[in-house]
Image: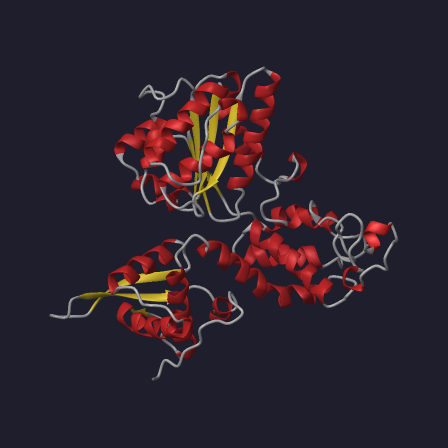
Length: 415
């Protein structure tokens, strides 16, 4: 019989001595407030009152079971698009409950979804209820059958639906948008569906077919990057993630200033503050200082890059390793032709112990990386009789790329 079975209280494990009863530690009182996916209370949302009101006006009819409008939210990463969408959907669901209406709300991260079937499966599974009697397996049925089961769930369990497609431009085509937006018109469902499409690309609408544009209407909202004062307020609203007295007075102003200068990205600002706290905790320092921000900056960038490429195939990372090796070795020119990148990519694959993909496939993956603004591409003209070719450059520091893995692929590009 061990100590727990006998009721004896064992000596605490010194490995976990810094963790208190609430899951905190000497630095963090509530680290959850600094998680990127955390949806804050209304009084913690800064500078987006107008956007909240505008979105609520468009999708508001759903709380009565009436047809809502569909909306496209544009803006750079970290400008509050997903935050506002999730906040409005949560309040809409609560108001629908108060009015005795059943409102389905769901958010799909299209960067993580593996195509059309996975997207619809995620929606159906998220809003399904045991009372529907509908099964939504993770695999094994056709895309069309996933749609049919989604329609059945909506018809049986709900009066209206709001579906947010985050990073909708990552879907590859607009088939999901077309079928969801036209489902009621096509007689698939009796339930009105509102779609909130979120994109970092302001030209996303231009990529849609005319039929989908017509279905979605012209309701668009632009989210500008946060300014320094807004970023400071956002961070101030989350400083109770730390214990009293842990944050030095200059940490939040400096974090906000760094973020405003570089990107105006609230996610990056929050992530940087969290990593500064982690640095203090991991090094047994009882406070978080301005100096810790510089030390935490690179780790925050590594985490963001991992997020960006999370939905891409492994060979996208091998391409980044190739570009990082080339960039590290370059003195001036940091633009590299596709053929040069492919040669180093083959060496990376050899180090990783995997087969290479075709040149055409690598061209496609380079285009996707450029679309995500991880790399940049230019079309160049070789001169008379030499045709055109593409050049690419890395938009992140090579050290950030290499730190995505504990054992990254460094190769000798001169051999």
